[in-house]
Image (cartoon, rainbow, N blue to C red; front, side, top):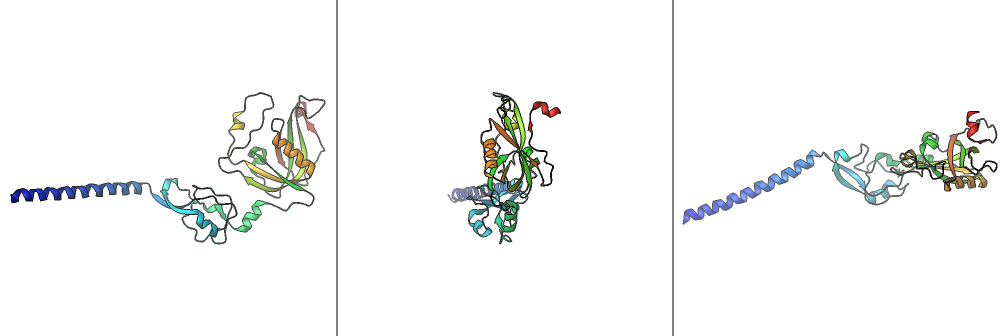
Length: 259
C-alpha cells in the first residue's frame, strides 16, 4: 500500500517538474525569438502632431515602443532629452517613428518656410513634379520664370496648335514645401485628346513640391487657371535671376523649336 502511494506521489512530482520544464523552455524560446530580432526602444507617434509643435507639447503625443532593430530608422529617437526649445519641422502622423530631423530650432523652421511678401502682391501656391521645378532645387528667395503650356486654343489664328510661353518673369518664390512621403502629384495632361496616359506621368516619384510665389492679381489668375484646368494647360518653371536676359514675350509653337 505504501509502495503504491509513494509511486503515485513520485508520478505527480515528475508531472509537475515536467510541466515546469516545458513552460520554462517555451518562455525561453519566446525570449530567444525576441532577442533574435534585436529589439530597439523607439518613440512612436500616437496622435497627430501639427508642424511647429514644441518638444514639450510633443511628449503627450508619443510613446516608447519596442520594435525589431531592422525596422527602426537610423535617426529614430528613444528619448526627448536634449530636445528642449525645438519644434516639429512637419506634421507628424500616428504610427510613424520620431526622427531626429523632425525636430529643429524655431529659427530654422522660419527660415525654410517663407520670405516676406512685397507690398501690393499676393501669394498663390501650386504643386509640381521635381523635373518641372528645376529638379526640386528651388528655395525661398529665388526668382523663377513661369512657363505656361497651352494644349491648343491659346492663339486664335492657330486654335489647334500647342503653345508655350514664358508668361511671367522673375517671380519671387516665398515658400517651398515638399509633399509628404508617398504623395503623388497630378500628372500633366497629354497633348493629344483621348491619348493613353504616359506611365511616367502617372507614376511620379515621391517628393513633389508645393511652390508658393508672390505675384499681382492678373498673374495669380494665370497660375490658377493653368493649375486648375490641367486639360488645357500646364506649368513649368525656370530659375530666372533678376539679371537674367529678357528677350520679350514670345509664343513658342512647333515650327519655332527648330529655328
